Image (cartoon, rainbow, N blue to C red; front, top):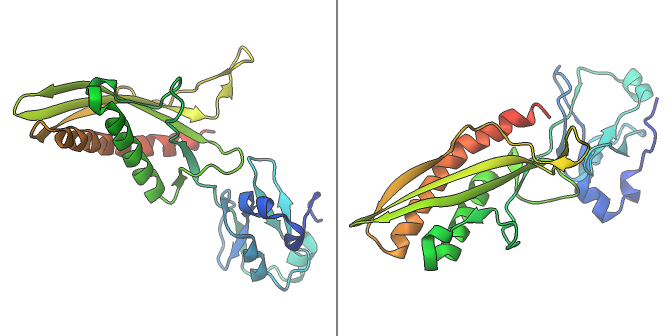
Length: 229
């Protein structure tokens, strides 16, 4: 039986195609495991299935390539229909002065550069991991990372300390019915480091090193938490 609401790939608008996902086949047994965004043109991998339609899904902008029961009955083959989770979105927008994600005020005149360094490191590490993305498409599920410089000491060298938190994105409905933040369990998430010299460059090197160390455990925590959602 074909799924309802099916839309042929050729009739989909460009905006639909960007936010859709596809379920595709692999020639080996395996369980169903979610889905990830891929180009709609992958539908051409199924030229022998006339009922291979793109079906809008219930999640944040996804769709699935649906092979109808009749098509599978005619040629079930050794296929397992596997879906892949979309990349986990991480919000890195630090442009709102009333809701900054990165706080470098402890760095004084170098605050803006320190915040830009934190943002750059977070984006680099997130986008390097194929399971994550900083590109917002549709209404994704993911996380917001907040990091602040908590201490800077200079005495022949530069020591800096950073701390932060990770909350689920978007805000979720809590027991009261309002939308609130669900914090990822990281206990005390922070670290410190020391860089040689006392220049602005030394400060930025220190901030970069600490942010990188924090993001290693941060990515692990987000991956583990996402499985619970």
